[in-house]
Image 1 (cartoon, rainbow, N blue to C red):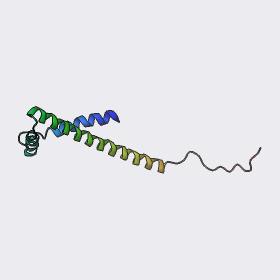
Image 2: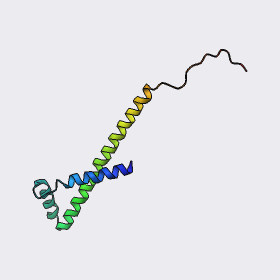
Image 3: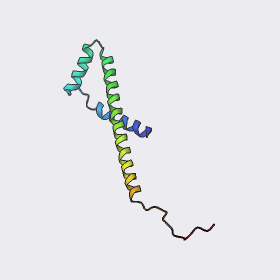
Image 4: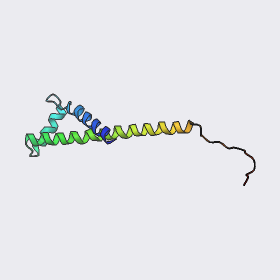
Length: 96
């Protein structure tokens, strides 16, 4: 599960980073706000990367937990419909 979470986190980070371009007004506005607080451009980009990383791993955790829930529900359904391997036997009175 940890490896899956990590791999999906990396993929989500890449998907989020694709949206950070000079043509995205929200991304440029966020970087401008970071720089207006006194951060240099490399510091603002590093902060943006940390924000993207945090959000990517949050999305990854959501995916892992959702998938685990679906597996759990499907296993509960499978167990519910399974025939038990045992039954009530009537051998008569116990001999001892």
